[in-house]
Image 1 (cartoon, rainbow, N blue to C red):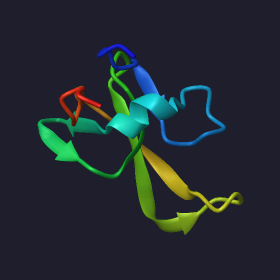
Image 2: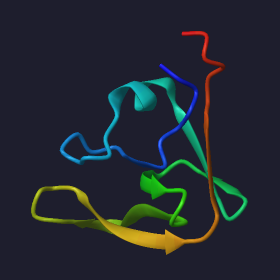
Image 3: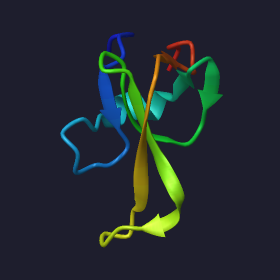
Image 4: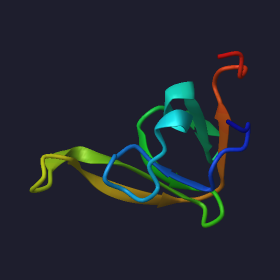
Length: 82
């Protein structure tokens, strides 16, 4: 596996942007200079993240998501020594 992160990544297995190997290594996300731990999906090139909007759920039992726009930085939390 390479040390390059995908431009877009989702935590949901039925998404076309899901990648188990990348998620298993651990991802850090910084949005507008603040580290976020509740990101469900991100896109670096378009500059947005999706986070849960309260406790409301959709019909599949997943949290309703809110899209926030701004500068996004991502990195691997580990050093790649897996």
